[in-house]
Image (tube, rainbow, N blue to C red; front, side, top):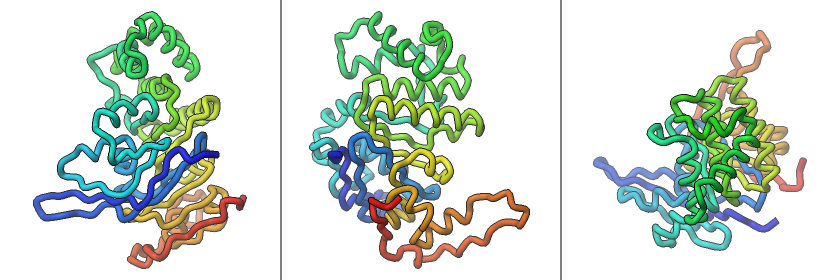
Length: 290
């Protein structure tokens, strides 16, 4: 498979009142066309800012300093003009955020928001054509009465329904890459499981590559082909998901797995103390391993 996303030596720092804060320290990762890759780590480890850099958002923030290579489908995101980066968003790449309710505009109907997204690819698309395509996508995400949903505002729908709308909207233009930042976290467990299963089936159907950002190891194990583990802005382990889960080689990866609650009646597991020892050389797994 050809490489779709190729990040090499990505570094990010923010300039604040107290000086420079380094956030990412030479991140390198890649995603092949149609591949599902997970980026796993605790809150504050740098997962979400990587997605925003791929979308070309932080490059336009005056306080942020971004360096390194972010190659997407043969183009270099970091050196693009802002308007060229903007053309990729919603067409060649899309993003699903954590909280679907706050990600949708409460002042526009679902139909209007679908039309805006679809016209990013084809500005001449008629409203009737937009509605027809939106109904088709809403049907794919198992939303009943999709024609009625187009007339609703986000606040009239449940969190689970809004999340399905977000998935449909993210895939309506058949993007090559989907960035999913903790999707379903704001939902209850049962609805979250249904939503993630639905997203898995849809990206497989459409052949969309995914960068799946999460701290939920159970979800990652079921969803991703490969996994990168990030700690304090550093990739510390990388490999096929089965290999990393069956034989974690880095202390931080083992700590993440040990911290997962287990219903054993034996009490809480001991979690190793977080220290700089976790920044030992990155552990790579053979991609041919199962």
